[in-house]
Image (cartoon, rainbow, N blue to C red):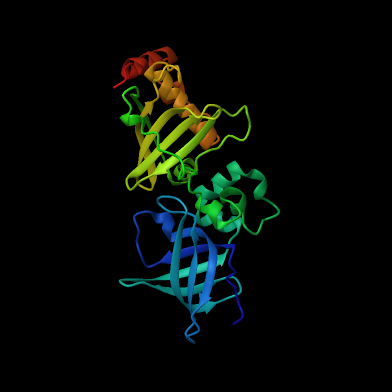
Length: 293
């Protein structure tokens, strides 16, 4: 049949109509197809397998049985049937313009993290390969922690708990959950992520020694993630820690600098508290945070 061909190992734009989900990007997401299997029933039915780039917990595998109703040069429209519902799905070639219109937060993140991958050349993958990875294993981006032991700082008697609050939207949360591995001696941190049903933990280790310094637990909330507190390693021969306020600021600087590629502005930034001086804000923050618990 003439028209758009769904080729494996290719990015497409995916949209779903007729169902409501509590996390809206499910309805519009880039998908990386890994398998396309026509059922050869004469009814235009095919099974699609691949990776949905956007989801509440990041990129994830999916499969769908689609009955094709229309196949144009640049679009496929079909009915997606499941046991208890059906919806209309559209599949189109991916492009920077499609990302700008339907996934603007992801489009901005790609331009921020991989500025050379989009622009006048209009790459066929719209920068998604540079951003997510070149194959399905990189795209899924499971943190490289499966063979490592979770440090469980919250269970160590020498650990200290302190307030470290932050919340991030859907795109930033996916960047955070990818973790970070130092590639040069000057880079002092490896950051691993452990996931569970409620959320997970971000674990910060010194790249030279392997010592765990911080564990920062989070929960999923409204399509993003939320942090309330953190644990630090108080073993004196492994980490010389400062005040809770200093540790909170240091953790946020490392996390946002390495995982999100931006500078942390600081809880006591004058721009965040226009009616107070910097010194007043810093002192209030120190009083608020001047304890471990």
